[in-house]
Image (cartoon, rainbow, N blue to C red; front, side, top):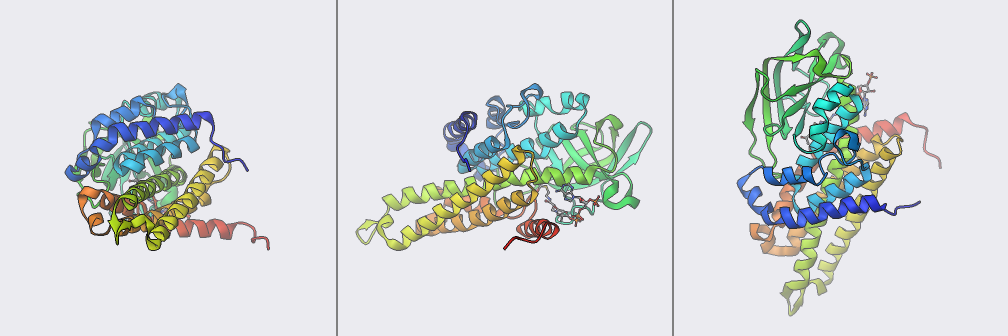
Length: 385
Ligand code: CAA
């Protein structure tokens, strides 16, 4: 088995690392404190080719693969999880389904400017009564001449305020349950489409999380993504890929907190020696490093399977489950290594701890990942002894 990275993958990784260190690190604490969306550095991510990494160059992307995408996301998340989620939603929850399911006309209008980072997309599945139970969609899309009228509310939409287009899932035929869900590309500025609320969050505070309202909002039939009734499958298949991104984000958060912990442990003295000389601190650092590497291998496996065109849903769910639980443990230990200073904002690890929590929740909670994994296991052949 070869786990060597290609030259192109290393190049994208290096671009992301340099960008994160030079342009994001200096603002990461301030944008978290002020809950300020970093428009300028998001625009830079577009210029550097980080907003459509696995999208072909013909559609404005970088023509890379999912492994390169995961590497870049890890680098950005090592420094700032807010930038990472903004990037991840545009790449995998918006551009990926438009690339896979869009017509050529749709790709020209709804993909190229987004994969190149000139515009930003968002993904609207969650509703007040449709979180883990994603099929319980209540937003309605009623036929009206050569189009639809959308009505209802979407919540917890990452990039919701800043996005130029929202990929919205809605019921076109309630009687058909999840087979009656369809997907629509709704442009900002469409009458009846508004931002109702921005959430004040524990972590990823520099990304915007919005409630969006659709009030008799007209959407042309030409802006429906895929056929009527295909929306739920599009959402589920998109989330399989999205989960690789969130796993990479969790991995980056953990790696960033671990690096800060190693640096602190080498510097901070107690009982006359740097705390890195104390065995109990060494154990914590060793556990952190081992768990991070294990998560990285799971992320790379899921990404490589996706790139090979092989089934990867179970592996993506495993990577997300393991990486997000690991990130929570590692960031908790990072505070412990820092002792009282870890509890203070100046030392940054508390930001990593707050940011890690959401990775256990969005794009499917840890409990939903276990459900997805178990369903895959039980649908397949009995394990060989
Ligand atoms: N790919 C394609 N189709 C799929 C699929 C997949 N991965 N998973 C399921 N489907 C299809 C099934 O084949 C089935 O189709 P048929 O009825 O035609 O046979 C249909 O979808 C229904 O499947 P299930 O019976 O498995 O559906 P379910 O209702 O039992 O639930 C679930 C499935 C896994 C629990 C799903 O609801 C789920 O993933 N929930 C979590 C939702 C989630 O992740 N939300 C994240 C919101 S976005 C977000 O967080 C973004 C952000 O801000 C960062």
